[in-house]
Image 1 (cartoon, rainbow, N blue to C red):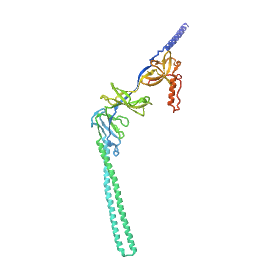
Image 2 (spheres, rainbow, N blue to C red):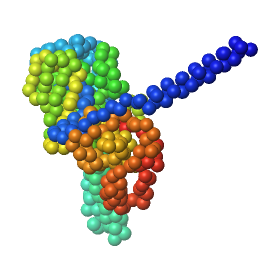
Image 3 (cartoon, rainbow, N blue to C red):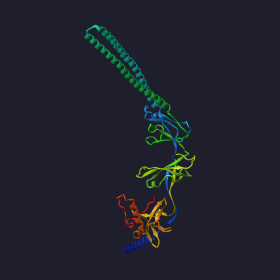
Image 4 (cartoon, rainbow, N blue to C red):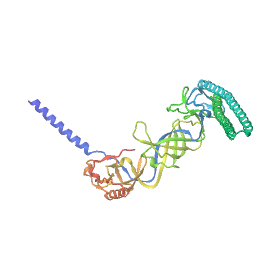
Length: 450
């Protein structure tokens, strides 16, 4: 019994000590503070990009491949030089599949021979047909002469005999006219048929000629000096031996102008409104950390595109790199620091000092006592945010939330009301209600650093 009693007393004492230690620890939470600063604030957005040439010349499939009468809709690459090779004008780049052209050319030549035979046959048929028509006309003329003689000899005959002779002469004269018109119509018909056959023959001849030109152009050469960078095929795969190209996707490779480079980057939809053409950019090259380059924004896309495996949207931004450097190569990764704003003589505080609810943003100011101060914020960078209203220079702010925040007084409601008024003015055309819940009625949450 005594042992149990002693153990119970020890347990109670340990519990009391634990409670005292916990309360002592809780009441002695270390306050982390900072000062409100005033001066110049630069707002910058950091993003990574990829170098590419601002101007480049494409190496494409032979232009004759796009001719309608060639009728070759895809062709395979059978040989390529190594990507990144530096070539001179006229130097070998690639070979296209000759076998496809040979097969099509053989068939096209057979069609051309058939068309030529058809023309010869048509000429013979035409001569024979016209010869028959001419014989008919000769016979008709003879009939007319014969009937004229009969009519002349019947001058002393009875009127009925003379009338019959006149009628017979009229019939053979009309037949002669019809035969002459029939010959003319047949000549026009045969000429039209011959023209169509000649057109068909010329098209087939042109196709054979184009195929011969294409066959001679299957060896692809560089149009100018440069470094060879292969394009992507219709499936988004970089061109390689065995890739199939079409007249609708004819680019084999590009020869970039490495004296004029840009960095292609993508900005998320939250920050894109801050990016403007002409903004200065500081660039770094991952492959050469010691290099520091300058540039400027030259284009901002109007339409976003989805990020892979994400619901977010990004916008393409192109940055021109000032100057040139022989060590820089296409597809090198760049770090881009875009200066979106520079403000002088502004109050600013660390982002960690800002807390927020669904409707307000505030700081904890330490004076004689700690108060929750509603603030009006301006632009921000990766470390600091500008404060338009609510704090004074050298004011002391808490970076961590104090004990029992629900008991701390909230001040600065006039700033909140002004924010609501401005919000309502911007939303006059909208029926969407404004969330005007008091700041201390919502659970506080530390602002996440973007």
